[in-house]
Amino acid sequence: MNTDFTGQKPETDKMDREFIQAIREGIDIVRMVFFVRMRDHILEHYTGNSREWCQMLTGAILNELFGTRNPEPRFVSFAQEHSSLIEKELRAVPENFEDLLIPITDALRMHFLCNHQENMPDYSLSVLARAKDYGILLEERNVPLPKGFMEMVYRIGKAYGLVVEQAPA
Image (cartoon, rainbow, N blue to C red):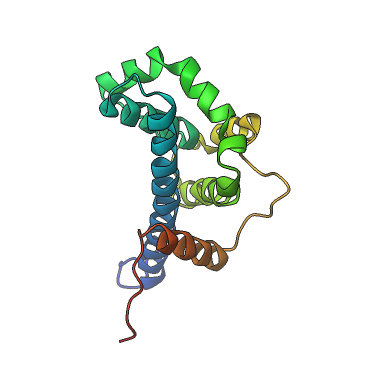
């Protein structure tokens, strides 16, 4: 950790944290869009199950894709019990959600970069490898620059009603 002559962290550390937080919010918008689309797909294809079950399955799929599993026991046991179904749905993402492959690829890569920047335990490489195995990660796509990623997130978020246009100050 760098400090200035007063022993305080430089202002750039605060800006870096704010910048990473903004990128993480962009990642969350992509995650929300994927959740909504997957939830609607699950509700349509698993009509014999309750809405709560469909939402839990959707959450388990999203968590598996991004490597952010919920540690609460009921979610852990649900994910274990339905692991083959979760994998089946993840393998079908390229076919069912082809239009989301670019945003998901970019969000996964930005997720990795944010984790790396914040020195978080790095399981992200295995997350990227699994996404590649599922056919979700578009390897030929370049890693996005933050500005381009946030512009894409804004367009997608606005299209799904997750981001509202702010009036100029």
